Image (cartoon, rainbow over all chains, first blue to last red):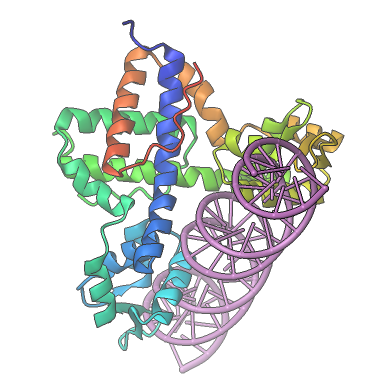
Length: 155
Length: 155
DNA sequence: CCGAATTACTTTGAATACAAAATATATAGG
DNA sequence: CCTATATATTTTGTATTCAAAGTAATTCGG
């Protein structure tokens, strides 16, 4: 039993990545059918959570998404009475978000979405695996020429 | 100078992955501004290529996308006179796709999109890095619980 | 204190992506 | 032959995503 050829390894890598990209969408559809909320919506509910009034911009940072994406996502959550928008009286440019009781119930009922699950899952890996993973992803990012979006290290 | 903490490494990993996911879209926007075709469109042009009449279903397989996604993508390519749809006379359910001369010109003028660029980029890595990468992506896929979409190894 | 710049968010517009329903054609069974 | 089933594609509907333009509120410089 000889080791897999470079070609096979490369094909496997491309496929894994494709699978990761799609698992996000697959989860989303499945979640919508079962619980009535999509993946990003679940993720947003969890990010808003019990905290008292995360802002739209903070939510965008937390989810690594464009503010306008969050804005329309929140529109839908608000339509479904899962979230409430409230202008901050001190700085009236700011909108603060809170879960309704329905929102909290939905949040508790739905399993965490793939992207939300990742950090916790990584906790269980050892340091060596983590460093390898970081290296690998940086290499991929380099090949795909990612322009470092937001260099915030928060440590 | 102490080594980065686990937290920082994990944050870095999540960010890299997010960056990879987004680089696809970023490239697409950039490509559209510069060349008038988006990433998936470039990828489709290349997949159709010089071959004589790939079908819509085959293109969906090649790009790992849903047929309906391809159908509307081809709509846009056809509107812009980059592609021609032609019903197969033998089996009139089948639609075969070809590039127009404009389509070929556009294909040659645009750089390959991220997802198309990945396999070639990986060629330049050494075996150790490739194996590490495969391991890393499998771990991530495991955490995200990817349901193996299409087990086609083509080797 | 007032205009300019900045900040926070929303709106608009377009592409991508999937699923489900609809359409059209082909094949198989009786 | 004709109906049922299968296959290939399109259509419809919704969500996600980004960028750019627009709106409203705050802050800063003179």
